[in-house]
Length: 258
Image (cartoon, rainbow, N blue to C red; front, side, top):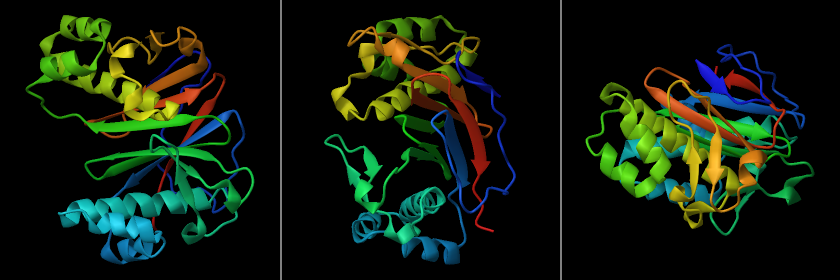
């Protein structure tokens, strides 16, 4: 179900709802939470009131109710998850973004704020938490895509395009999303946004190859600084996690509002 590179253990997806209200995390751990965003209206109302004024304003800008509810659920659950790692109520957490938009916890809230990242697609969300490692996560729904070759040619490196097109046609759709999530997770972990072109580095994407950052034309040493992990949190979903350094282990939790 899950693949990883040297330096990590192969985790199992935790589906129980037994996570304690207060969690600790050490420098060799990464926690990944999986959450459904299609939740009851009373829970959505609760999450809405934990959001900042800016987050509420952003939620109001969505044209469709489904997108608005998804934003509220994702950001509300993120606050609820993070509150388990710090001695602060969800509504009291404060965030700031770097120049490229990557969010972090405001350290003025308290010392030792954890690092985090989130992704969501088709009503499912993933949240990754670390103590002091930069992290990035991405999630995509596997669905038919008519313009795989065109999009890959625009966004992937020549090596990745070559590998993708060499695969049997029936494997290309999942390989495309596998490549996409691994590249996005790495870019998100770096926190550089679109200033880091997607064709400047190569990731693995073949079904029989573990997740890896294969090459970087920006800095060849990047391949030694990062570890990638690919996994499928649900059927028809593909996800990737990028973490600075090696020797870390992953624990998966399933978020429950019960």
